[in-house]
Length: 299
Image (cartoon, rainbow, N blue to C red; front, side):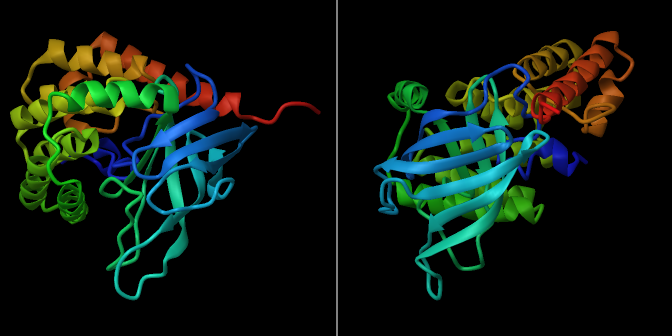
């Protein structure tokens, strides 16, 4: 079975283990989230803050802080303010959150767990993804021109239900709801990534590859997608493809704190390969470089 770290349940957010600043600048400037609107991201040492600039479904005023936290290694530990819907739910709530930074794409992603019975229009499924404003719109627009977006609300609800079943390890049920979400909106990379993860966990490697390739069309610089592809090709005993995707994941900043990659089948399949060992060492160096970059300087 693939480990929790492997499938990136926390990353589904957060889409990912394997973030680092080793190959890119700290997040800063104008960012965009589809539903939240345009925000300003500021980094000062280990601290990060996100303030509203304009737009968004929650109607937050300009200058309001919606995310604040501190980096610990490659993970931002912070608090997120969001608007909620649902019976007996407060209109606004601040919740603890773990967010991950992808240095090449300069994106922040967070998996958000809400109280039972509550939903937030700020989220895509259970995910909040912030991308640089200048880069977010063109890539999404070019893909959506080929896709179908019929009912965003129905797609969101189906994605949330699929995410719940994924956390419960009901792989088949999760696949059904993710596919239902895509029938309403097939332009969401989070849904394709989630579908690929559910197929991978359910032992359907070929179906996982198909979904993950579509996710990569939407978010080509996310390191978790090629890592999951490497895991899928390992299950198909395709050494060349598995190594190629693992190499791409590390190039994009995938990081591990120590040892080998966290997927046992991948490790068993490629563990004797010299390149695999080299990529594992590079992933560890990514992690160390990120941690070292954020160490306080001065006396």
